[in-house]
Length: 221
Picture 1: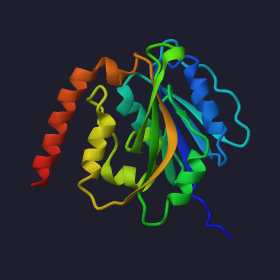
Picture 2: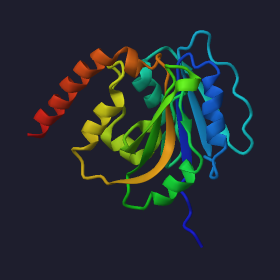
Picture 3: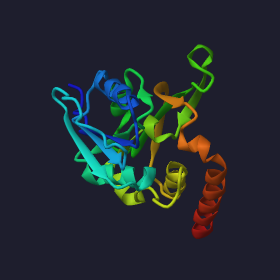
Picture 4: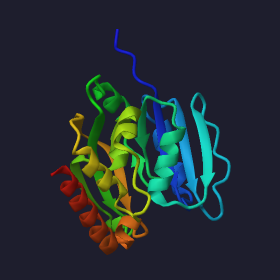
């Protein structure tokens, strides 16, 4: 008999997602192992996100809040999550088939985070000339699964940065002795379309990230 898998909550931070939110949701519902709960955090979209479609057998919640940025939306989802394990998916990305089953099977008792590979697809040149690249051992939040206790121990994402929140979180995580397991199986399609904050705010992000990582290193001395 296979061990019982932990309950899984999926958190989708969303800001003016348009139809891409449906693509993200469909990629979750197409998984071979479904989550017990999906939480969509509407981070001040204009207009607000409407009613979510019904998901047979999966609890779902739509939480609306004033705009607090990516970190604020993720933190709201973490606090609301009831699952032992939390996975994240940006509204403009999609999970690849088998992500939940593969990563939940790797989430052993001593493992705090399970990561996977990411396929980065650049759509900025148009559908016919899109470019793809593979990133192994990706620390993109959408390619990982986290025990909720780890997110509580390390702390949530910073809410005073435009785009560097996940990398700053990993910088704090690196100061712990918590264990990460990676799979080289691609689990996430990261879609680059020119409106991603990580691209439009790239210069500011780089300066902000360098400042924060240096601060963490100084604290560890």
